[in-house]
Length: 102
Image (tube, rainbow, N blue to C red):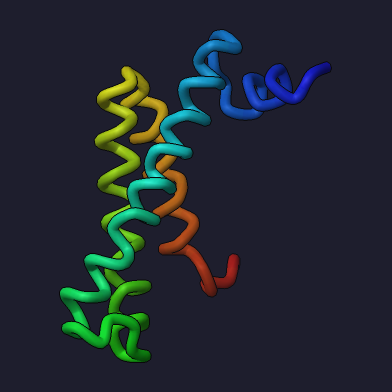
């Protein structure tokens, strides 16, 4: 079984093309976050750019921004329903983090 077939099965996708599209969406989102880091740090810290406070604020702000970008690119590439379900699973896991089962 190839790695594309394994991802297709794991993500419950219909075709190898969908796997490639999902991977492209993740790549586009990652590159976008990479490209906006410097301008965002400059906005947060002024001309000095990378300060400790600006870096902390950046990491706090980047999680919701990444998720919005992921949904946006998912929509543009026709995979919004996959990424919407992906986001719901992610936030369900995050909200249950640290809770014990009874």
